[in-house]
Length: 116
Image 1 (tube, rainbow, N blue to C red):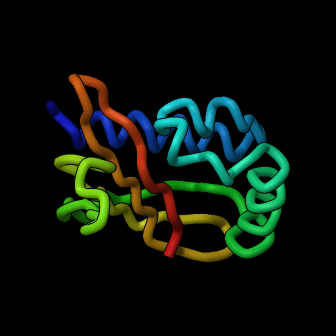
Image 2: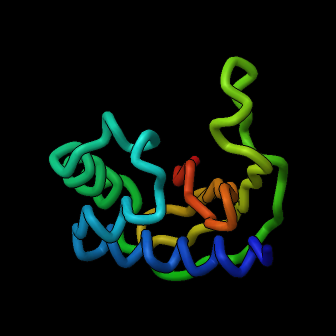
């Protein structure tokens, strides 16, 4: 799996989903169990808060890859996970953008997308 390229593709999709407030596009790379408590109304509320804090997305610079988060109580949840980190440049602020992905049965899934 060329997971950096996949993470780049997923990041592009998620940034587009944020810009257009498209919940279905945002979650379609997640496994269902990872978005059970993240509905469309929470997504839209979160996106408005992000825009208030960060402004609109401008650009990014790739910083690196680290081992993904694992859950010791449920190691099967995100097997072979990796986290990809970019410096995200928005018109109001700069942040770290982190995309966590894992592979299950030949399919790559997002398990995390956060700004820090």
